[in-house]
Image 1 (cartoon, rainbow, N blue to C red):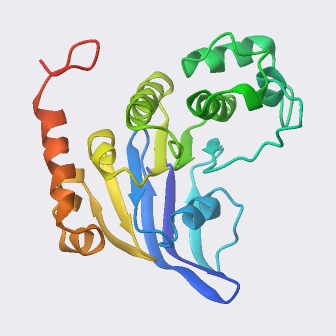
Image 2 (tube, rainbow, N blue to C red):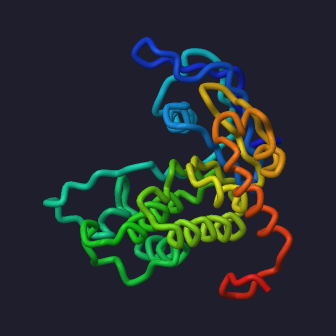
Image 3 (tube, rainbow, N blue to C red):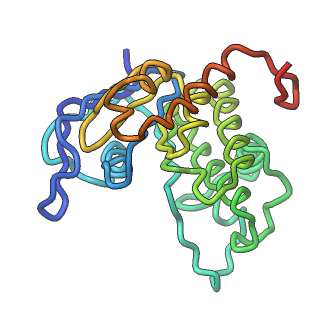
Length: 242
């Protein structure tokens, strides 16, 4: 049984149709990535799934007592606001020191409790956002372009962390990304969105689909080449190809 099923979903905002006839499902423990051009409705779809946007029509069925952790695309922090990492993890409700410490350890970020949020690097801040999402012990972790602003090594490390967390806590992952090369190696399934679902399936199937090529061009062969490379070689502890 799927953790979450979206059926015939449509969303209109300010009189504009953003999404129409969207069908998708997320199964336990799988990593599903949504790709699509700017303005294709990716963020709107995620916000609708978490309940921040009301659909115009269609249904979203969630497994009973489904816990969702959400990492937004952007979170603007007032640079004059004095708030530490530890205090931030207490929002919107306090958590124990043990739970906060465990969440920070899960994302590979320790000894940051007393640091100001505004003093964190981009990579550290994204990991703190991820730690906050993990505090609710999610069955489904949703990430909206969580690597935005990170360099390529930082993005690759973050995706590797997501895979580790998926295996550690047995959650499913639904994420939006514009980094096509990384997506192909990091996902179990890819959904190509452009107001509706253009194509979906195994990464190798999607990257070869005409609908995908029409949106992203012939350069996507590079994504396919990377996908094949990642899945046909073993790697050492440092991630180097053996």
